[in-house]
Length: 202
Image (cartoon, rainbow, N blue to C red; front, side, top):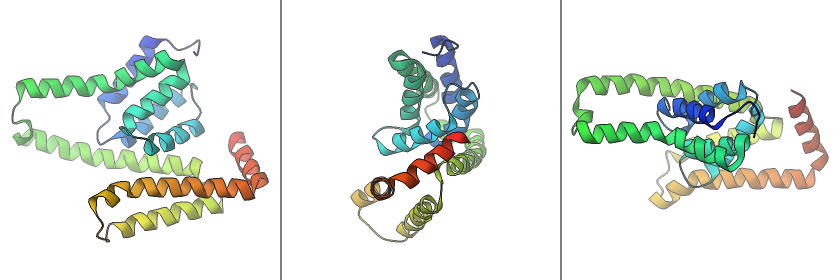
């Protein structure tokens, strides 16, 4: 565990992140980077890797991310505290809504508020994508993989497929990217080492 980190501080940081994470886990990436990377607890490159892993395994991206980051900072206790901090605001808010407001979404003021919130979330997700791209796109090969994936995703929106295949589509793309990376490493190990050395020196 980092000597400069205590569990209460870790809980509070993820509580703040969970409080303002609207629209899913991707919206929390800039917040995690500001709170964690700025304190030099975790490198920016590691955050990018954690995003990829969190997206690739079952569960909510926000919860998976908080677990990975917490474990990296303070092992098992850090993982538990980070997850609790991340989910506590949502739990309390939903509990309050269920207790007090039976027709919460019917209130005009709530609808207008969420319209603004969702618009802000779009900006946060775009910012996250840009920051991840700066770290993840290392050379022409990774750029080509990114472009192909985007094109396939866009084309997939216009192709009628079953619900099962639709839900598996992102997983298929992630696995395909992983296999491509493994093949490149197998056939060009020296090139990959050079790329990651350059990445570590940035």
